[in-house]
Length: 80
Image 1: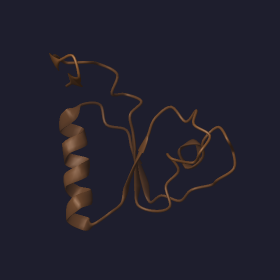
Image 2: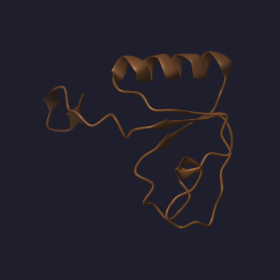
Image 3: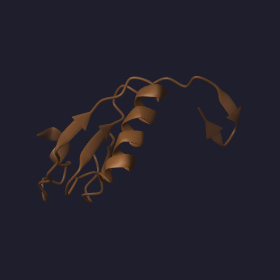
């Protein structure tokens, strides 16, 4: 349920699934499947927003909660 709302508590979303990837390969797999199946993907951060931007209307939620490591810094404006 926490993936279907934000701190505003003003909106309640709807999703078929929530994915919590642990690495870049997981993210690629999730997006590849969503692209093939034409499934909307909503990215979910910490849920502290108050505008409803992370609340899905349909499709799947991709949580970034376990994507907490920087593997390398390509340049000062781009992280991998």
